[in-house]
Amino acid sequence: MSFNAIPVLDISLAYNEETKPSFLDSLRNALLDVGFLYIKNTGIDDSLIQDVIAQGKSFFELPEEKKLEIQMKNQPSFLGYNKLGNEITAQKTDWREQIDLSTPHPLPNPNDPLYHNLLSPNQWPDPNVLPSFRPVYEAYILAMSTLSQNFTSLIAEALHLPSTSFDRFFDDDQQHKLKIVKYPDVASLPTSEQLQGVGPHKDSMLTSYLLQVPPHTGLQAQNLSGEWIGCPPKDGTLVVAIGQGLEALTHGVCKSTTHRVLSPQAGLGPRYSVPFFQGVSYDATFESVDIPPEILEMRDTRMKARGGRVDDVEFTFEKGRWGHLGEATLTNRVKSHPDVGEKWYPDILARVRAEQAANTQKEDEIKREEKGIVEEVARPSVIGRTTEITAH
Image (tube, rainbow, N blue to C red; front, side, top):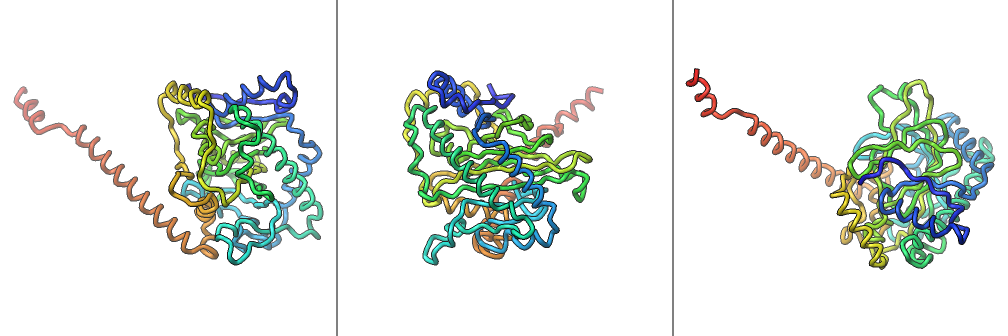
């Protein structure tokens, strides 16, 4: 059966020997059946959470010219500020503004692979205007880096693997990323029909952790029947989404779930959120982990019981398509941020647009064929019409 609710797991149970086995059973079921879950009692100090929310809101209240001082297209790293309507998902505009940050890295060397441009320093808001912004977010990124590493170890244990099984996919100075996002309500958008806060997508790497600022809803996960299940804010929780990288590494055991955000209804005001994305080495190749047979059997049994999977999003990490994870990641970033692509990666952007045009043409041809079949079935035959006339 397909899921119709998002499970809530108490991560503190994982650190008690008596309750850990039950926690791992619940985590394993969430990974196999849903790929989306809430975690509570994360150990992140609530005062830090409140500072993160306050500083994020303060950033969006800055005059536009101050925000544009650190706009994303200034650098080839895809770090920095993106103004409203400047990102694309599923070939449609996302109606949100945001700033992307990451763990600190120096500029890459000239001889490094092109995708190492993703490893770069952050663009920070003017400290004279927001003096607390940088220290608050550096503290939060550090805390979330630790949480994500610990949670990935628990995922390994839930799959009957050693807790260190995924460690080889991380750099010593592993980059993790974070967005601070503002979704204006529909009344603030050019037309009331523009409801896509962010379109249907899957997160790329291993795991991501979403801090939702209450009370706004809008986040939805797509179950295996194609239905959209609401994921409203819950006090003291983070929403964990399993990424495509983890699905690939685990032979499809851990499900990467399609999700989206709808713009807030008119009059509700903006929705804020802070998603944290656990990174993986950009130099990693598309190898996988040896999953125990009993876990693979669980996967197969569930797939058979469900009888298929409805999925609106292309799987990015197909074996043989890319040499390194960084190549796939860079291409996805160009696809989402064509303004950065035009300035820094015109060849990649041209290839992306050619692929999109070819896919659109193929989809149109399929639709025309299907329409032709339907019309042919619906059209009465000449013999049938003649028979009817004669019968009168």
